[in-house]
Length: 88
Image (cartoon, rainbow, N blue to C red; front, top):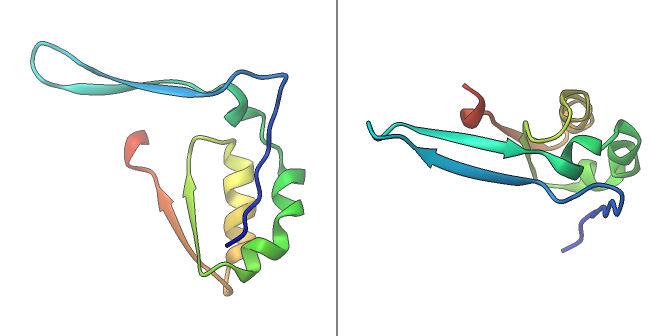
């Protein structure tokens, strides 16, 4: 199994915390860090891997343009699942 990984030493790691209020309602607090620094050029470098994948999972923790590009590259080749629940 292969994969593409990026390391960005100029940005901190991202983190998400789940908070719960007195009524039991939760909220996710996100500090995106390096996630929001991902650019379309990195997605293009993964074009072959995306095309060969059976599934790609997309989340809105990276810039929307990179999510859209990955979905376009997967179109008609790879099953793409978008997890957007945390953003409703």
